[in-house]
Amino acid sequence: MRGWRWLSIETLPAQTVASVRRHTGLAGIGAAAGPPRETYLNDPAVTPEAELLTQVAYPIR
Image (cartoon, rainbow, N blue to C red; front, side, top):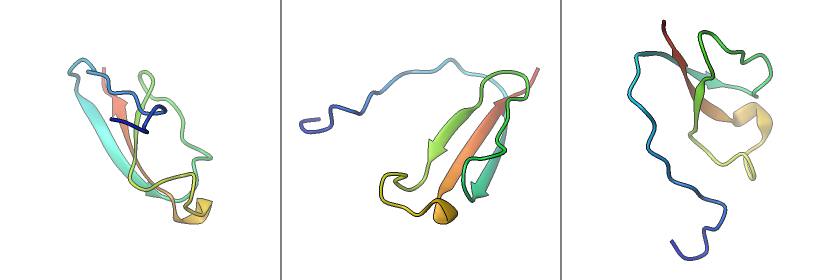
């Protein structure tokens, strides 16, 4: 991916998660049973904080 030096692609291990989608800033997102996986649905570099969309998946024990 030429020009995308900041991008890294990783394969994560399969696990059961509880997923939530937030439409706000990142303050108040805490860990549950391990570190969450965050998927940014818009670009934090150009999107106002109040309009950020983040899907957070928390591991379930």
